[in-house]
Image (cartoon, rainbow, N blue to C red; front, side, top):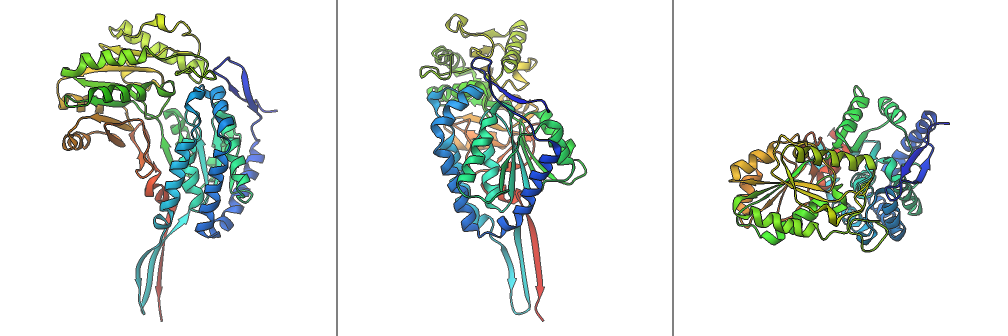
Length: 459
């Protein structure tokens, strides 16, 4: 028997769920079912595909109460914040609304002499490899447009959120999607790599670590299968002298600490103009010291454990190294006596430099470094001094200035006066080690289909 894939709960270290991974033979059979179901699904009228996909999303919403508690057990998010259904619904509804125009053919000519047009065709079977930090939101980004476009979908979910994939499969089954159109498979890494290397998929979407993204591309090498990746970031915020200080502090600190800092586009470093620096830092510390670190099943908890002890230890290591190199940790540890194991107290660091790992490597935890900058030029240089490029958050009342600064940033999305948000009408994309590709918006439909040209000469 293969080794069981386990979800170890960060709440108490217990095995919350475990499943046996499919053998390669069983997984190959499942992918073959997806391939055989794809043409009939593609041939289903678009309006019907949209209707069934949205029905599946609603079925998922009907499970929200149970999902909220499951998420707390699986990855530590406090129940007070609910599940992810509001965001799932927002993204699904938007992608459904633009599907007819995004997938419409481009008519070049339809005369007595010629019919020339470009149509969009689905890619076949789409593999979605989803992460644990937002297990529904990240998965739905690709699942919904892939299904609406006429692809079938195979989902491989992270071991930390084993039950999320099962919930999605149950929801789409309840909505009446035909067998094989959507499947959740429990796969280990070697089986996943073998399937990819056998050219079993028309498209692969992966959200996770840089190492994981490299493994996906290596497995797909020579198959010509497109691989879309979103590999996290080290997202900066820049507070200019004309910013609304209170709004900037509240939003950026929430963006750094929410979900215990385990957000792909969470704020991990903040640059503040000299005039506002001291006030910003003081307000930030005051906010963080009000957090309640504890059991995510309890209503008063505002900060739950990190998803795994090893994630917490990695952040502790970054903080300790930074302090050892001269950084100052400002949050009083006496306020968080339960800081142990996966339960990690939040921290704000000043006197940091880009020579410290905490300002260069992805932390993915409740810590943020804050640096003073003298002008836009220094801020731009520091924001671009990163291996990642997912989002950047600019705080100013001057949109022209924000546009000027934003245009020079090496990033996928530039926010002004907000952060840590995904707009489904805009392409979710990145650069550098954040990866390549783009989900949501009309761009998602382009990435999940191929152009097919028709050139008919009428005799």
